[in-house]
Length: 146
Length: 146
DNA sequence: TTTGCAATTTGAATTATTATAAATACTTTT
DNA sequence: AAAAGTATTTATAATAATTCAAATTGCAAA
Image (cartoon, rainbow over all chains, first blue to last red; front, side, top):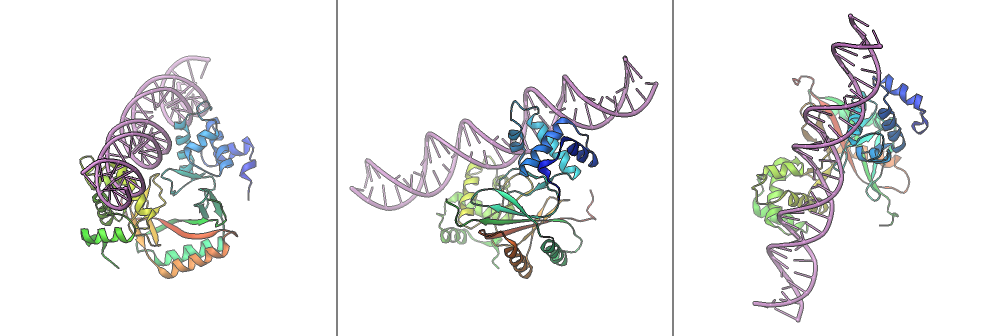
């Protein structure tokens, strides 16, 4: 598993190119931010990069996030918050959504994921193709002070 | 299983009361709309009720949907669209999200749901309590004309 | 009744997203 | 290396979605 945190600019440019995206400075910045943040809304990326006063516009952040999602570099995840929510890990895995803190984290289990996929394909209505499965585990820590 | 479509105003008022909510006219209207629509955003509820010119405000729709969700009458589901998305069936079940049509439908399978829940509890990090599991099946119909 | 209180609703403000058209930056062709 | 063409970014505006504080309502206590 690669450490997204520690990718060099060159690594990022390569990765963009491999996904068919030209490595513009703005794209490198946004991807760096996503690596750092893991999961983020357009706005949080923008703020991470300095908000107004940063070397790009919020419109560009949206554009870039969309291109990257289309290219398969990022995934757009379903969200409870009423805003768009991007994931730097585009592969399939579980998401732990913590009600108490509002944070999201990843949980991977190849075996279980595979089993769930099979179970679902078995009951899916005829004529439909399953593209992917998104699973959120809504959790809380009972010892987390309110 | 009750037919939500066919509830009378009295049924709805009762249901609201049982969930600890006063049966105001606005709440009855919103719940009726949710019964009709099944899944809906605040905006689609508002439009279903006549939009501007209806006997309530979009802000009221949000407030009412929130109260009902808090009361357990509705569920707030995660959404790909970057907007809040409510479900008149607050119980746990799968959601089929169709990329080609943008529509959402329900899929129920007690057995599989139970199995998934167990599998997940087995791998959940220590200290966390699993409140519920949300599962979206992202699908498309290959024969759906583009 | 009036008064006070809490719940509910609303209009207005805020935040989030998309659209558009002009400017910039790259590429390719000449 | 100029011209032409394409992709990207930007500023700005328009629209959409959500929140918030003030006003209203309905009820209960005096």
